[in-house]
Image 1 (cartoon, rainbow, N blue to C red):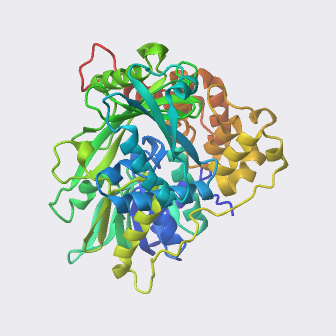
Image 2 (image 1 turned 180 degrees about the vertical axis):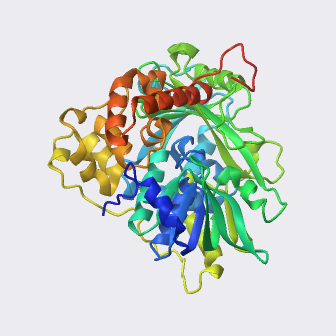
Length: 538
């Protein structure tokens, strides 16, 4: 089952194989959750699939989401029942198929005198929500119960709170698991290799000119159809075949604080005191996360985005309003992240008012997908492939209901020695690779990395077997140490260095180059903006 194509040192072999002039059935541009889902569903149907990304896998939106696999409760209120129904069904499916990676999380909505929505209206919405799930999650807590559940909460004019449920995930690990399923069924998947230009014959897209981001090498490939799954960047590639512009990039920012500074056992939906937007305060990987904002981002280019000073102030005001007794300050913040959502523009004044459903455009051999929710990535993938069927004679891309993930029970005796929560984590995060991960672990690497939830063994496995090209791939996306630990994880520099040198063969010079690159990225995009900077810069 285990594919060696992502092993350290194998990238050049993958690139050389592309020069054999074979015609691919599908070339997928974009290695986020949407592209991964498309590659997985296409490969299981026996199609020759090549997926590429000009950055790392999950580099864009899919490593910087709010980590929530949710049913879209607010869509009920706006009348979008279909989106909610599909989202709830897919949420339940993911929790069933990938426990330890996608898990139920409780949510609490506090109700205040004069606030909206009140307990009555909110519970009507939750009745519909639970009906779609086929089980009852909702429960109303009286005021005296809230004081025990959340002693730090703002009690002024508090009436009570409603509890319900959605799910939480590690978004970039979800992408990797889906890509591994695609690999298992024969897909070729390469990072830092982007579509530089489309190849056309008589106005029909017939392939793509690929560019290696590391060397600049150009590699032409032929394909029956090219699928543009670059999300918020979709208009850029589609601009080669049309002048239409439909995508509205919207930035969402988050801050991470120690769990002990703001202990929450479940997610809190806090209505911001200024604009009454919901802001979530939730536990993730042993930390507490506050987010998100929702702002137009404009031109995003081929670079990361960062939280602005105004967004930091906005999030701090929300959390301090909901939990004033915590006395949280900026000095408590470990890290931040900002991601760009690929909204499909309808002309709404506020990006929060745009619909979250996906749209597909078919342009003579180029199929573009944008919009949609992480939760429904499987359904989005099937919709895209259904559109692409006209270029793939004899292929049926109907929904068979097949599992997204191969059900695999690790047999390693080392797994049995781990606590139950770590057994669940390893199974969920690594699936079919769990046995190999534990087999490669050194005796002292079954310990949890202080301040995180990951084992040292996970760091070693990812370094050697998950297509690591740069240090930020390892610390920000394969593991999340860069978000969870002070100094972006470099408080453990010596140990991380030893693993990278052993698994990746990095010299001292290469290590120093990678550390310098990583520190620049982390300080620019994952720390917090200084108070003396303006709202748009660091």
